[in-house]
Length: 527
Image 1 (tube, rainbow, N blue to C red):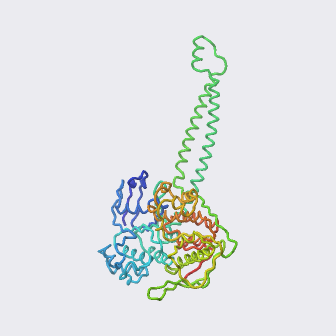
Image 2 (tube, rainbow, N blue to C red; image 1 turned 180 degrees about the horizontal axis):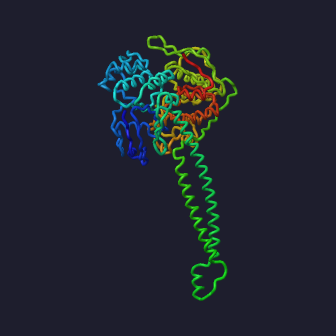
């Protein structure tokens, strides 16, 4: 066991006026299974790279541990896995690598395959096996669940639950709950460490936020009461002061031997007491304001999102009957995917589940193709034509029936097509720019990002662009293909609440179990 001490850490990117971290201090244990939580753009990956010495910074990180990072870069996808392992870690021990692969339910034969031929799940497992096969390393595991199906997530989660000595970045609540024992959180104003898993931290966070909100409301009422009292006391003091004889008038009367009448000395004493009370009220008011300023600094506000789905006059929007998708192969044969049939009706969220490669994304594209083919016969549907380019065709047997005149909105897995600025993107899709930007702000998108090109965005920010665009589109059916990859947990909850409230018709592919259990109304398992 050893400790990593982060003391007075300050870091900013060259050319930026804002600090990513400012005077941050905390301590972590290298025996911990540490979950790492923050909103998109808050600096999770940056912090991991600071630990690895990738950037210069002010402050200290000590001692300088030996870190390994997931995912590591692969220089040549055509090389075998074993050749890549030898490049990355020449000092690896073969038997330890095979042991870790066995724990991950991966056959050792995968080591002799070209890396290019591995599925996303296999690549994730191989990389983790390589990292955990080395001794005396503290592992920095950055979002391993992206693109993993539910089965892959379960096996990786089981594997990590038996390990220790890592920082895990993940936005999957169920996944993190089962394989971490401490949580590191980047807040708005600081970084905090909690003992327990995600649920323990979230319960504590909600309790703390509720207390601070109540305390904030109490102080606001106190400040209003003190302000009113101060105004009253000030008016009384002014009235008494006006009734006093000023110093000059009193001195002149004494010089002339005049006798002052009335209760002026008494009035003067009352005035002095009133002034003291007013100053005491001002001090109490200032103290209350300072206490209030210390609250809610780390409150993660999630503004309510809005969605205005269209309701079709037909109850059933899509009906798949004995649909089997296939891919022609060069030798004249074909690869067939499992047959499926189901319906999507108004107000339903149908969740497609199954292993990677079983055809979930292809089914979404097949529905888009069916809508486009039908609407082209009626004059064309620009949106569907843009979503599925003419060169991309889904081959299938069976039938897909769609409601006439149906409008769809699609969130694809891939974000590589995002280019240029947000205004240009909004114009291309016929979006109201102000609404589009407002939705991005509600998804915690910084205003400073609006002027950048989308190529500069993080993957989480790109996903938020796609989701905000879809929320702007009034549609009868929403087709979302793994929309939550790279999306922070706060935004996931925000979107979860939105879909639960408005209940749009949706065909959804998503592997976040907590999310799909809350928003899904029907599950279709592809085997």
